[in-house]
Length: 120
Image (cartoon, rainbow, N blue to C red; front, side, top):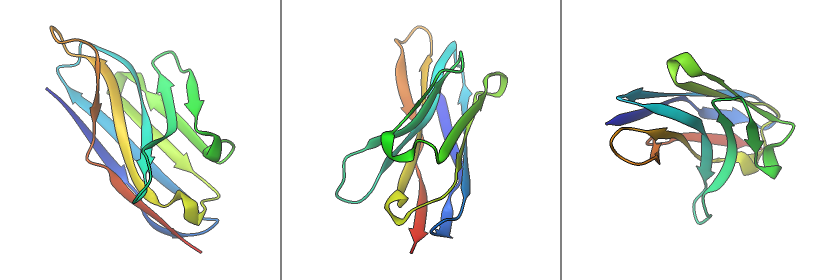
């Protein structure tokens, strides 16, 4: 079993910053990558940022230049530094871990999500 636990989030005014953290734990055989998606009410889930074990990053267009993702491979943790926040960043942020837990196939495991609210 794999547990994905997020921390951080909260409420902030536009232009402010927040930092999210996430840790994957359990009997992980290999961790390919971790990252964040977000989902606002009535909207589809969208990619915020992802990072592979090799350090290759991928960002959603709406957050490029404002958000930075980083990870600690040894601890299976990932962090998301969010700067210059906008009201449209308001959403539930969900962490995923792209892992193998033998003998099961590779899949994403998800956290419960953490709320980020940005007021104007």
